[in-house]
Length: 353
Length: 130
Picture 1 (cartoon, chains in turn purple, green):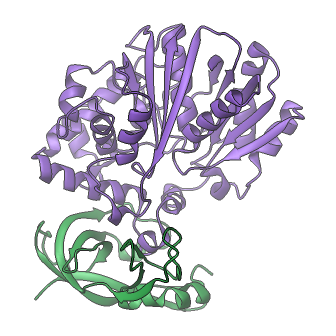
Picture 2 (picture 1 turned 90 degrees about the vertical axis):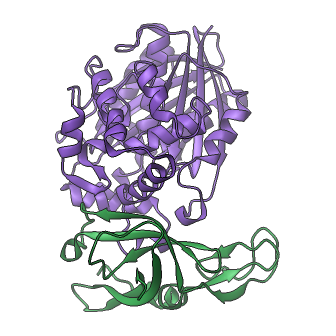
């Protein structure tokens, strides 16, 4: 299986555009470059709640004047990765070209509404009395920090590196540097996590075309799952990421995009993928800052929830074909997309052919 | 209306009494009315989780969701109960910074009241044990 084209819109606050307009903007150039697909796989998450609209796949098909098969794929904040996985499976099953489009909106209401909408990722019996997406990550962060003796200052390095990487990425939402001090002094979202440990609220859309026709970039996928219930897992490790990585044959990629909705999730992802030893994710980051989330990650490129996994695969494609930000050009790239801290993991491994 | 009477009613066993449905074969606990274990096909048994345990982690949520503005900040804890099960629950009576490892106990508290109907939602919270 191959990737023959990708396009992304700038991540940010698109007050002027709906989720369907953003999706069309990302999709059209890819169809023009690669040709008409046999199937369209669409992912979104928050827009269903923000725009009270749950039929994006069909509307996008109408806009593209596409008459083939349409699927909408959902797996929480890992929806983008799930859509890419399914598209690769569809091509493997016989389709020549499958277009994947991830599009989402987080900013159509004030942020506390997005905070509420993101609670829908969490099991109802854990979310109903107010546990937030950030709160779940904060529980993981304190557990991790106490288990491995990691300080608040050390954890802040994640945001510093991500923002630095984003400065060279034109579609990133937050392309400005931050200092450790600024991370620590930014206001508290869910202690021990601060605003600058957290993903921004993002709108955006990305598209990639998966094909069986020989192309300069190949793609393989692997996925695995763990309990959704947060209390039922080790919050300092993502078993599903480890299992999916084993299915891929534990490759050692030149660069990786991990799903760092919050700093702690990025650190845990590096360890769960086996790229760093347990408790040593930040050491890996410090030694290879350009090879971890060269886009700036969810932290600084941004996190349009249901579109994020498609952005990551598009970025991997850019890194192999043209080069990406401060990383430049590489020949292999691993993408880690995750639903609620590893309830589901969707990995894509892209290589130069 | 944000609070649904039927949802409040059907969730009473877990939210008021920490009752779960446990599979006698695989031991997994369902925090709602899953009457037959979907994996083992065994009839699940209603059991009550322990009301005391040890705090493994906690978070102070300052950016609260819409509808919880009056209760900000919200404290949450990951608690390992005396029966070995684990729970994520709201913490209450937090007078000083919680300490990892401290003993916690269950207590019934008000979660919120619906703005239009006045329907009140209650649930088990955890507080530092006396």
